[in-house]
Image (tube, rainbow, N blue to C red):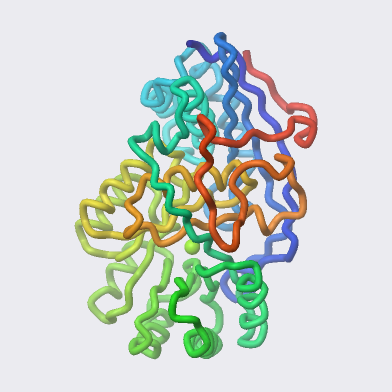
Length: 368
Ligand code: MG
């Protein structure tokens, strides 16, 4: 089987509610999504998606992703998409780094490999759990009252896992954490996501003030060096996502015991092939996982769900899904959807969902 054509589509995905990170420093209203259609000489068609979270969040953006695809396309055409390691090496040779540009191709190849094998991607990767995965909500940085309101909005839709965005004013962050914890149902999974918003001093102040609550802080500071420096000074569990980019990062976090949780962002780390290695490092070191696409439609959420299904139930805390935050629908309601706060693994071979091409408009580039 050979890849014969790669079509690239760009779609703006508006967010239903404007979204702030880190105390209002960053505001997001629309995500720049790239969809990739990979065709083969045997009739199999795979789809991939790469949707960075805007261009101010991490070093990734829509135009860069599409430029990366343009550079890599001639190295990918003619390869067998079922041989995902061959495709991975071809992309890494053609364009070192730029992982976020590679993930949609990797996703489309896994989609084709699954269809060719007659298996959902998770099963092709070795076996997918059918235990539904809780979806983590995304509660943007707000006041105490607004935090309560947004949490309730998600609870009304069945959500039992939440990523509460903090990382702004220290006193307000402490007040919000205490209020959420005082009112949380016991069964809920809550992560306090700082999105790198604190200095070391600010992080220590909040982590110590909330020590008795034993809450998990995600990405409290900018770098792994910051997180390492704070580690002996507090006892709070830590999750790392934005600083978990390469396998070397994963190895360092595990070896130096920098976190209890990996937040694996598939677009950020370069797709399922690379993320599966991080999963194995986590499992070998007793580290739990959150899995997320980074952003995007049901396609990106489906990819995250497949990886999450390959994690033993006890070590998969939740998946984060973006689809419920968007105002446009590109797959006609198909694919894994929020069912009372959970996503269920699709049983169809491959990814389990393809977009409506009409909803994507004309391709902005075709390579063949
Ligand atoms: Mg995060």
